[in-house]
Image 1: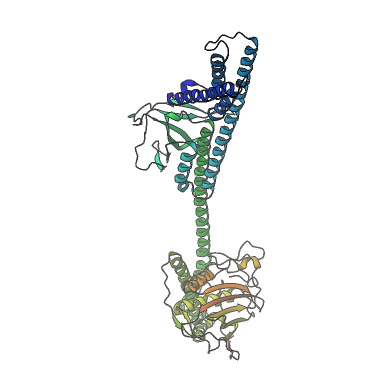
Image 2: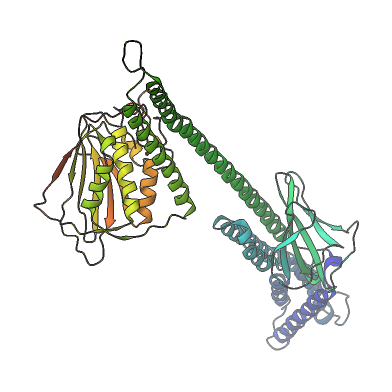
Amino acid sequence: MNLSSVPLRRVAFEALTIVAALTVATGLVAVLESLVRVPDASPAYLLAVIVLGVGLGTFAAVAGAIGAFLAYDFLFVHPIHTLAVVDPGEWLNLLLLLVVGLVVGRLAGQQRERAQAAELRAREARGLFQVSRVLATGDSREALPAIVGILVDETRMERVWIGLAGGTPLESVAADTGLGAARPESGRHELLRRTAGDTPAEWIALHAASGPRRTIRDPALAAHRVVIEAGGRPLGSIWSLRSRALGMPTREETRLLAGAADQIGQALERDRLRAEATSLEVVRQSDALKSALLDTVSHDLRTPLATIRAAAGSVIEGSAGTASDGSSGGRDPAAAAAVIDRQAQYLDRLVTNLLDLSRLEAGSLRPNLQPIALDDAVADTIDRLAPTLAPRSLTTEIPGSLPPVLVDEVHLAAIVTNLLENAVAHTAARAPIVVRAAASGARTIRLTVEDGGSGVPDEALGRLFEKFYRVPAAGSPASRGSGIGLAVVRGLAEGGGAVVGARRSDLGGLAIDIDFPAAAGAAAVPVAAAAAMAVLVDPTTPLEHPTPLGATGSDVESPRAQGS
C-alpha cells in the first residue's frame, strides 16, 4: 500500500481502530489472567488481529500483530512495564504470538482483499452488461443518458458526461448527469492512455496546450477523461469528476470506463455505417425507379407515338390523291383516324396513371367516397372500353340486388379500366375474361376480375402491385411494359378503404380481388339466384395495338405469359 496515496483522514481512522482493537484485547487478556487465572491468555490478541484483517486489510492486521506482541510483552511478561524478557519460555510465547499474529493477519487481510476484488469485478461486469444492453436495445445517442447514470453508480464518480466531436474539434455534450452545472473544458485532467497487448492502461496528468484554462472550482474533485474511438478516429470523450479522497480509479473502474468508451465508439460507428447503407439503398432504389421510368418512356410512349405518326402519314397520303390505277394512294383515312384515336387514348391513360401514381405517393390524391352501384358503374366502363376489349369474350356476373359500395366513382372507373386492360394485354385473343361481384362479408362487397390466360408464377403474386414491377417472361429477365397499372389499382383502392389481393383464377389465369366497403345502411347479403349478364364485344371491331394496350401493372411481351 502506498501511504502517500492514502488520505490523512483514512490513516487516522485506521490508527484509532488499531488502538481500540488492541485496547479491547488487552482488557480481555487482563480479565482472563487475573480473574479466570489463565496462565497465558496472549492468543486473545489474535481475535483483534483477525478483526483488523477482515475490517481494514492486511496492513492493519500486521500492525495489530506487532502491537499485540509489544503490548503483551510490556503489560503481562515479567518484569512488567518493560520490554525485557527474562524467562526463555516467555520469549517463545511472544515469538509464537508474533508469527501466528502475522500469518493470521495476512490471511484475514487477503480474504478481505479477495472479497473486495470480487465485488469490484462484479460491479465491472454488471456495469459492462448494463451498458451493452442499453446500446443493444436502442439508438446509441438515445442510450447515452442511461450510460452516464450507470457509470456514476458503478465507478463512484461524482459526475459523468459524454462529449461527441461531431466532426469538429469541439465536443458537444450529448449526456450529462449534472445538467446545468459548469464543466471544465480545458485545463488539468487525468487522461486514460491505452497500451497495446495486455499492459494495463494508465492515467496520465494532462494540461491544455492552448486556450483559456478552466479548472474545477471544487479542489476536492479531479477530472478524468477517456477518449471514445472507432476505427482509429476519435469520436468524443467520457468525462468524469471524482472525489480526490477516493484516489485514482481502481483497475476495475478503469476497465469499466474504457469498456464503455469502446462500446459507445462501436455503436456510433455502427449507426454511421447503417445510415450510409440506408442512404446507398435509397440511391439504389431511386436509380432502379429512374431506370424503370426511362424504360416506360422509351417503350410505352415511343411505340404508340410511332403508330400515330404512321397513321397520320397514311391520312396525308390518302388526302394527296389517288394512284395511277385509280385506287387510293394511302390507307383508309377513317381507319387511320381510328388508330390515331385509340393510341391517343392509350397515351392519355398512361400519362394519367403516371400522374395518379405520383399523386398517390405524395398523398395528395383524396377520394370522394359515395355510394355507387357496382353493376351500373362497371357496365359504363365496359361500354367505354368496347373498342379495346374487341374481340374478347367478356362476361359480367354482378347482381343488381347487391348493395352499393362506398367508393370514389372516378377511382372505381380507373380501377376497372386498369384491370381489364391488364387482362387484355397479357392473355391470348381467345382467353375468356370474367367480371363478377358478390358479398364477401357482413360489410364488404368483393369485385373480381379474372381471365383464362396462362397466369403468373406463384412467387410473383406477392409483387404484382409493386410499382414498375414486371413479371419475368420465359427467356427474358422481365416482361416489357410500364408496370404501374396494378400499383395504381392498389393505391386507389386502398386509399378508399378497400383491400386488394391477387390469386390464381379458377379459369387458369390471374384473378384480382378487391373488397370494397358496403355503403352505410345497406346490408351486404349475398343473393343466391342472381342473374348473370353476358356481354360479347363485337368481334368485327379491329383490335390494332402494336404494343400491349394497358398501361398496367406488369405487362408481358408475349400474350402467353400473363403478368400484372
